[in-house]
Amino acid sequence: METEFKKRIGFLSFGHYGAGRGSHTNSAADALHQGVDLAVAAEELGIDGAFFRVHHFARQQAAPFPLLAAIAARTRRIELGTGVIDMRYENPLYMAEQAAATDLLSSGRLQLGVSRGSPEPAANGAADFGHFPLEGESYADMARRHTASFRHAISGAGVAEPAPHVSMGGERLLAIEPQSPGLAQRIWWGAGSRATAVWAARQGMNLMSSTLLTEDTGVPFDELQAEQIQLFRDEWAQAGHGFTPRVSVSRSIIPVVDEVDRMYFGLRAQAENKDQVGVIDGLLSRFGKSYLGDPADIARDLAADAAVQAADTLMLTVPNQLGVAYNTKMLATIAAHIAPAIGWEPNTEGPVE
Image 1 (cartoon, helix red, strand yellow):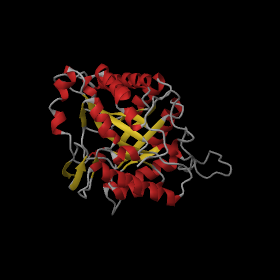
Image 2: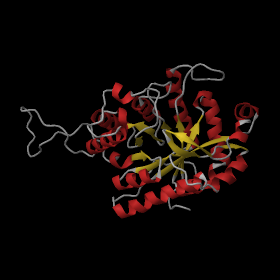
Image 3: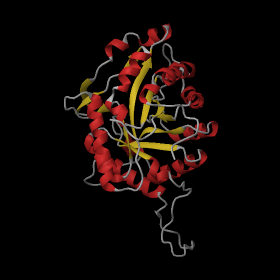
Image 4: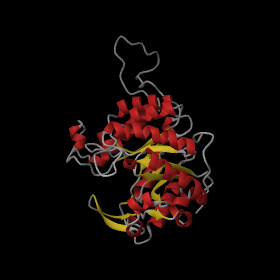
């Protein structure tokens, strides 16, 4: 399935840090500084986006906006964003202020992936952050409520009663400041099933789909994900939101071209070259295969991936603990020998308008 969109690729970092064999990110400071440096290097290669996973109570990236603002200050073209922010943990109005400020600093390059999130190390981390479901509401419901409040705030709508001494003229409610026009159309929902993709289309959010779906119908992962994308687009067309949505999928792509690659990933290339089925969060789930090995073989197989063809944006998960030099080399190999097979060309002009 082909799309009318120009294909785009971005890297997706989980921001891991900690001491270990081969780790170049022994501390949080290492991971943060290297995240900025990798985004700068990726932009020089023509990569379209720099995205970061958000996890709490773990040695990973947890507070994305300072990192994204730092990247904005060092780059001009590359999109920057998240994949995804767990909205159970978020204060919607404070997040709206941070997002708008970061988007303004980046001149409108922010692409925010949000969702209900995945299982976290803390037993009840959202409650530890001070967030509790309303009566009769699940934590997933609370995440969607937080998302609705956040999106309402970044749209410029009034959200707070003015104090008695404040003259509002004809306006009744205060809006958050700053506002960044256009940001409301650059919010993505991380959908783990076909049903949530349809829900995201109804809400008017772009679709961000990862390497697992919390359902399994027995068909290969890429076909199941392509079906999810088509259901999203069909629902979007019926909703009539007034703009064209974007769709991303993520893949683990590791070209093996030298002895260093073989040392780290040679054995994994044999074990991870097919879909896997397992249980996550109590749900039978299908995990997509990894693409590891010879660049020519990866290019051929990736071009046949139904979901990669259906999406306009491909997220490349990177082994961030191996350092900036290693990941820059990996992205350069993908850009030169793999990504052209799916119709990608280097980004020399800037983000999607």
